[in-house]
Length: 365
Image 1: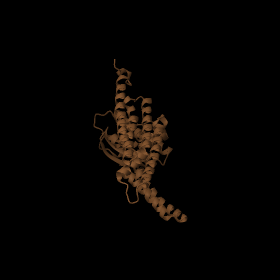
Image 2: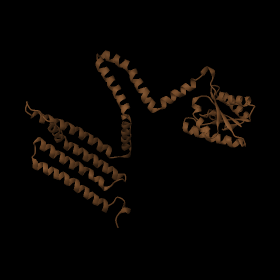
Image 3: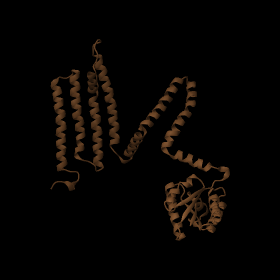
Image 4: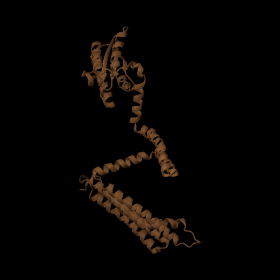
């Protein structure tokens, strides 16, 4: 048996005429087609319904039936699911012992996106696309453009470079009026180069994830959002302090001498390490607070600020020794303090973890 299946994916029939779908039978489909043509003569689905009736009348060598199935407006996934359910209903109404095969009638590429759903339920002998002759391929082109514009990756790949290219002329005109042609070309080239670099390295995905985490933290009350900002400020201050210390040490070198790489690194570390340590402590305290508030706290997390202080003590002692600011005794004391901080904090919080577990059910008897 051959089933002529007319597909109206966006449910124009139901929305504009009030017909309940699926519609099965020649008379019922013709009545629905007339009702839709009366309600909206310009709707392309009118042609689909009349084409279904026409094919039904033209097929006389096999048993045939015609039906109309519809989806929903505005949601492709929900529309495909509803079409599948209505196809199941049509097949159940046929109640024939013969194998049923389908001839699908659509009005363009958008409705044809549901074909895999139909094929999963009934074999398809063919697809008949009905398009008004004066508008041949117009709907398919519109649907293709719509899909391209709705795809985020395609938008970023095509529309952003196109937008940059279209901005070149107005920027050049503005630069000519301001007498800054070189600066304008430099800015344009730099922005376009950064965009291509970000796209090539996939940096935009990392930026999107970071922004999403920041937004989530802002609305869920995460302390790390504040502590990370403070830590970033401390790191910036530390970097400036390291450069200032490097400049000061460089000025103390005799004119004929040069500042070696070890001493230069030691100068930067010596000037920045206390700021970096403060940044690490602030960031780790914020993370510990969030883990405690959200039920994921473990005692070993408290090691982080002590580890930061231990590393800072070691780096400060080594850099001070290399610069000649402190002697060997200070270096030995710094190494000892750093080691003791790391070992003692690890042992202390391991004991706390075993005696005072976060989950009371796991507490030792």
